[in-house]
Image 1 (cartoon, rainbow, N blue to C red):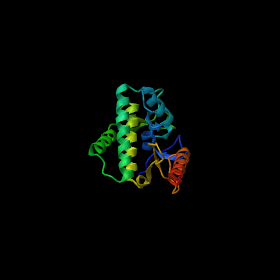
Image 2: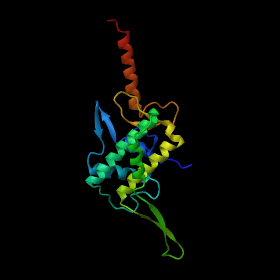
Image 3: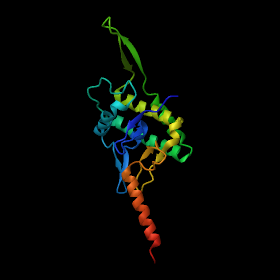
Image 4: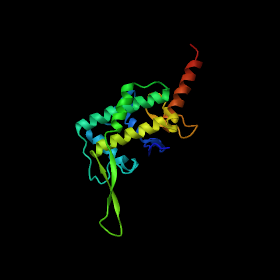
Length: 204
């Protein structure tokens, strides 16, 4: 069975599926949503930081620099929001919007890559990978494919939404006792429960 691509989360230090890392580029702070892909440079930075976490051959393989256009950024945000809705549907065990399913399937099919034999040195043949599109589109296609494998596989049952007050992040429950996306969210949730109990116990 194919396995979903995992990455190392910046928040908890735990392994998270690649689509979850991408979904979590939308976060929240003090009750307001925080857009992690506010400009093309944000997506360029995200791709560079995660380039070693894509399956081989990675989308940035051999690329000296990646340049994201405004249109590509728009496509990335639409895919990110689609990924978030599909993960939420899996977590909540609800039927997804058919448009979301169709969109991630379209994104998954936007790029193809294949190996070609390179044999310049008689003693050391090698391989190079060709791709039908640019590095950014390739990366988005791989994210979409990873999401398909994640949602359709056994790992999908372990996806969770963080229930800490104000948090909008997702995580993979790799341990039965894990209940939050990070220790910080766990602390905030415990404080909120403690305050709620105090309010209930206070006399009118």
